[in-house]
Length: 213
Ligand code: FE
Image (cartoon, rainbow, N blue to C red; front, side):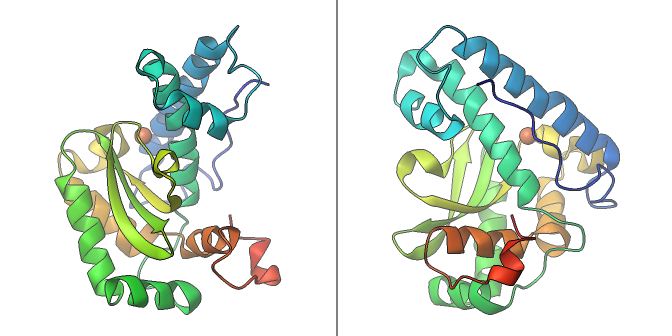
């Protein structure tokens, strides 16, 4: 079964003014779409062709001669997760279960925010900044290029794409300004909560689960 480019979970202009429609159209319609096309070309005729996306990522990750397959499939997954990590009118401090977890693991929202922003600013070159569940605790993690937490047994909860293509049209070289806008205005905390529930560490909330991805 071929990998597919998922639709954005909101219109391309929904995150304006923090991320422009033009950035979203390039990022989803060109970059994300190209990873899908390349991944499909690369797995054709290999044992990966009939495998699910996450299996391909985990199995190709340790193999040095399969970097292209890993890079392109991981970038499919990372981008889909990034779109779902944001929503119009998001960001700021969460409440409920997520707020409780941030307090337990970081001391509070402000400490989480600082760690996340510092990790994003400090990532040299292209990569991703994550909030993950690691052995029952929440943690911030930075990964280079296409790397993601799936290959080290951590549960991804939130990600910010810090490749230049994610922000250059809107913020030029000002990555911290982009990450600040992501944290203040875009983070989809309902998605984080849904990931925690999926990992079995938050109470199910059936009514809210339907709309949260
Ligand atoms: Fe990207």
